[in-house]
Image (cartoon, rainbow, N blue to C red):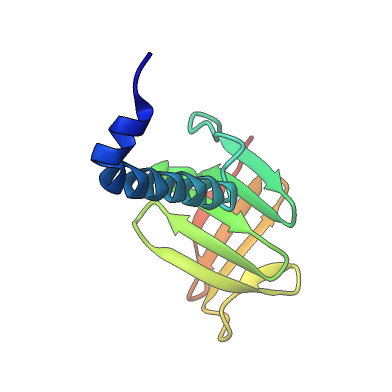
Length: 129
């Protein structure tokens, strides 16, 4: 049978603090990962329009004319848009659509259809049909 008393008398001043640090690290990792908001749904990029709803937000991916795409994270107060030209835009809700204060950028959608108007011109026309 191993002699634990001898082992701890020889190495206890190293082993005990190391075990304490290891236990603290494990507890921190458990706490950290339990507080993270993990995604529950993987959105397929092949769909013409994909929608994932979680609480009060909705993630929708639109396929548009000319090979363009819009990825939209939509909530009651704003829309966060990622456009295929590389722009990332956050715009507030304005009535039934989302628009910046001067109306020069407007994102509107109805079901699986969406449009973006910039400076009075329609620059993105997207539809699932």
